Image 1 (cartoon, one colour):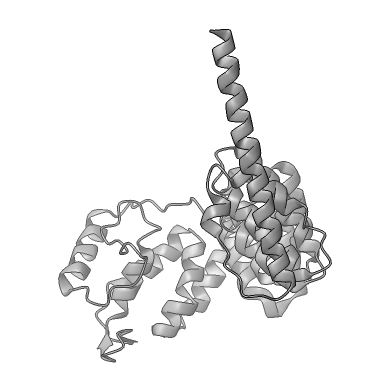
Image 2 (cartoon, rainbow, N blue to C red):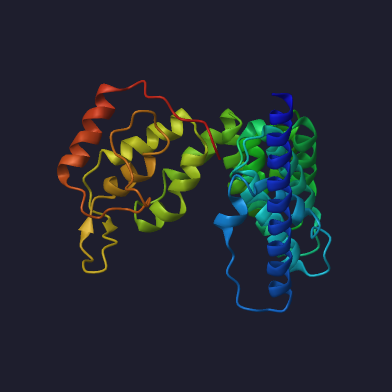
Length: 305
């Protein structure tokens, strides 16, 4: 019996080893094609498959210090995509630290990839060391500071609020993302400042696309109450997104769609592709409003960026 178990374990070991070698070879080939500026098939599904994820992370790590920024960028991206598929929390935690280290890269493309990937990770994968690293990035980073301010607000840490408040006084041009980040950290003064600013904004598609996502990011009840108050209006100040119609429609339609992922039990959902269905009927808006009236103590979902 012991011999049989040993044979099975050995066979599994050989299979994993062979698989790792195949992942490494294909990853090296991919990096070479990128280096040679060839047309790339990225094969994200293959490299992030559960059985290949760990080998992808190991392979990608060998390119973190490559001389070519595009290679470094793709290496970190593949490692992150693979880590998100891993079952191991420690692997995700490790890759989060790797992404944070990449924020010190001299190439903006690498740093851009970092903030795009970091937003995909739950707070629990940010270790105490990661939080200290993020504080340093928020305080000193030269590329995309507004993005890291908001990641800092999402993650939170011992010194994040004070760092952001210092930034608020240092840089008036970036006041909006800093105020949003402080809102996420439950700063009452920033919540009132944001509400004061948006109260002067006209509803439109520009508001839906540019301002509403920022407000939803805050996860703050006073701000969500303000958003909901706007969803109760029938004013037709938004233009339909339909390519065959440019009719004016209530902005409430788009507001309720955007709120769907952030309020627990909300009765309106996205379609399978996450697209906006421009054919929602008046009954959908009526359903949303009835639900809001019946659920004055609605719960905001604070998970995720």
